[in-house]
Image (cartoon, rainbow, N blue to C red; front, top):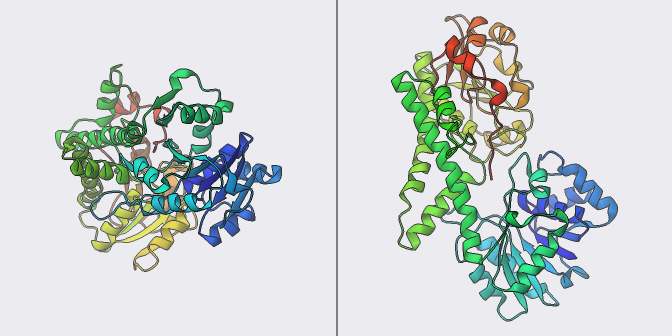
Length: 456
């Protein structure tokens, strides 16, 4: 098939590249000339494991193209994918201007009947709006929301948990099944429904996962107040088959391009339809409180933050990505600097993005290596559990940090280190909802049991 993907961002680039690897001829279109020029030269603007190899393979095979214009033969494509951003407005609702602009462009470009596949995360009813823009042009809209986890997107594309297709005609459903046939999906992994239900599935999935995270973070604050241990609570409730053990990890709060945006957009959609989504709204409020909780815990442990140097390990919102959107590191850095601290950060992939974000903020520095970030620091805060941080040399950490006021502080905001290992090196340990150096608890916690956090 011949396909056009509107948007060379995260979703569009992974989708277009994946489709080309399935044997389709794909053009990825974007108005950003610098991004397209970079892609044409084989330079990938985002960090995503495995993506660069796929892009280069598609280009060598002549199936993957990048352009700021759509000309023959792609004006006679079989399908046009809309994979543009839907950023939040001030009231939390999704800004659909890019989606509508893409639909208008497709209407003026398409030279034959085709399908318009909306992969962008959009509120209920958006596909109807897009269909109205397309009018009687012979173009039919299909909802096909993406479920790509940053850091594992390539695997998610080729081995999806499920594929959701929302269409009004049997012809559209049949086309989408044929398009994805090379993935050899069994029937129970194909969810065929109407466009409005399809649109809501994406928001509902993200809101459900965000709610689990926020609930565990609230429990971690309760554990802190009650002198209980969140590890034990997680193991206890996760062993219940009705609950399961996924997304039960307390931390500094969720971030990224999906959860914060989509949770608020779902609440805004409900409000516009006269339905107050109180549980979803509470999940967002709880997440906002978790970031402040981390800053407060640091101040409590250090006595004061003013004049202190705080080292941060991990700037990306999760491992295996360079995405810092809504990352806990951004919120914590702003809070610490506002309280008079100096922040020195390190991240193996997202450091440059973090540095650009704080380019004009005094008191924020980027270190060249993880251990260099520790020199003279009064506290180390682990915010992103990259594998390179999982088995550090705590003795070297102790040697690098400022011990003039006593044992330096290690704040494990992801609860991946054993407190006894930290304290044995002459450091103070604090986690999220954990007691500290408790051998009984440490014996029950296997670090290998901790999964990398996921975002949809």
